[in-house]
Image (cartoon, rainbow, N blue to C red; front, side, top):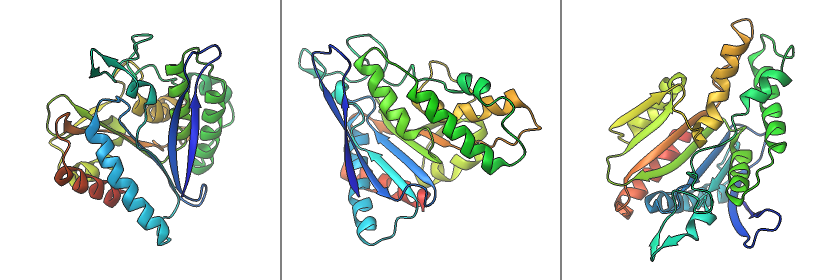
Length: 266
């Protein structure tokens, strides 16, 4: 395992934030999994699950049992963690812009519809590799003008080429539920069962460009654009997991949640 520190700042910004990601396994040696917690920085149950995930991943890594690559970002929003209003943590919206931290991610498919014209064929595996390369290039060209935008670019750049992306959140008061794209229903159903989710909510496009759809929706958008003569599978299983309510910060919940997530990845 190695940790990477990502400075989050823009030119002339009065503050610099730091994002930390933990990297397990070897890139290119198998599936890539990206997991982040508390993109809405005041959603603490997600951080606790990420804490137990990190403990287990450290153990598995020491035993040489991790195949492929896993990136874990246990506190995905250092900007939101710094925000308070009258002593109350406020991590859902960027106070400098009013924009939700889980909205306004770049939908790279619009760039890729042009850059991939005439370059795709019937080889699905080759298409996936090429699409991911073009997606990374599209994000490299993204030039946010705010620190919040820079944070979004940094997070999405780590996740855009993942096979599985898990975005851990919680609600104000809720049972455990999940969000995913309609084409991913069959792939996500086992995770919903393992975590005893009460509801799995599906949409082809929910609006506002949330993080999970920035990772997954490009695949079916491109498939629709290029048509059936081109083989484009839904190559990123992206799921938003809502870990009950904001007061459900409990070891007896977080440990089984972390175990279920790892069982899904096994």
